[in-house]
Length: 421
Image 1 (cartoon, rainbow, N blue to C red):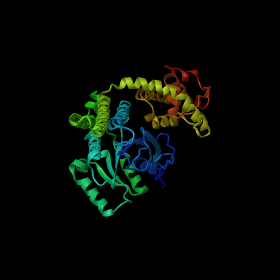
Image 2 (cartoon, one colour; image 1 turned 60 degrees about the horizontal axis):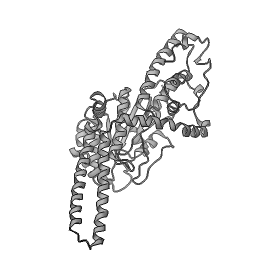
Image 3 (spheres, rainbow, N blue to C red; image 1 turned 45 degrees about the horizontal axis):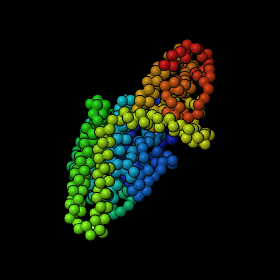
């Protein structure tokens, strides 16, 4: 008997298939975007080079693999080129908190680490500590610690580094002892095996999700936030001491030694600037996110014109709403949920649940001859969500709603009742 389960990833998601959400994390340069591009076959994913990050925000890439619709979420590196550790943690925390509220759980996390990193120290060690606190203990069996770039460098040195990573408790040893797995990414097959091993696992909540949602903690009070804040406090104290020492040196400099005074003044200004930056990051950890969300709402609407222009240029490649079923539209929107705000995801899920119930009733009443189309869902969302959000969910082209909102014959006005709030 021939199985109908695809052994190779397919770009198109499959209606009715279960979903598996998997986050890909790691420091900048560990190969996150490359991993996702290799596994999904999506050629549009931009790959960074050297130590520059190409992943500014969290982005989900969907495909079908081994009976599952898989959504791999690419995350910014913990030592991102353009964002501070605080900003990166905020981005990830916001997404995880919103996902938890919308009842979306991760099937797993793939944490990537370049085997060519000679030592796990400094920022790399601190960032891994933050990741460890972000996860907690419950989901450890759903976490894969994977090493990359085995094709570069001396193999024996790479093996020695892998052994050190896996045996030291302050590195990966503790997580491996509690159920996490260690893997090597050497080619496409090894990458696919890692994803395959997470499919079917029972989704778990992360520690930071429970802290933010159930315990209603501020980000700075979470375990991961405390790791970042501890480093900020340490650096703040160091910079203050350096500034005091610099001031003493300036006081001791004779007035006629202008050259040395200028050098000290430049150093003092640099330290003051660094101290100011650190203090802003500390405030950012404590910042009430509601003010930022209001700002985001205003900025979100202004992006609509630019998006519509871009979409018009690619209109021939866009998915037409009349070409998909209600179930396919639902699956596509859920695949793109990570692109919209938390409140909008909640509204989307409520409406999907409401219309799914109606769709079942329509099919049952007609003996399976009629069912809702995607137009019903999009039209209902137009009442509660802005056009920009619907565009981000994959349906950017406005369309007139006709009587063909149900597939099949004999549509009744009773079937359409109650679609609007």
